[in-house]
Length: 82
Image (cartoon, rainbow, N blue to C red; front, top):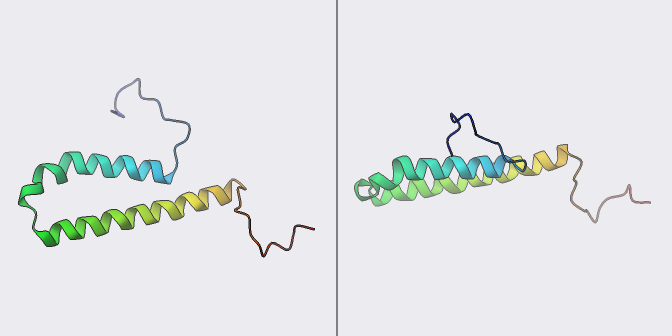
């Protein structure tokens, strides 16, 4: 997928998790994978922690996006359900 290509079409279901996944895939393919043999165990561990952290932030952002759309999760403590 090349965003500089004039034929680039943005998928309709783009959300924070999708964007993060695409960015992480690009970083993996372009920088991390080619250097994998040169990374120390600590470097690899740190990259894994960063990846998990980015996924967590993306998940929270997606939840916020859903709330903004009015898609609230069901709650047992919802007193507005009379």
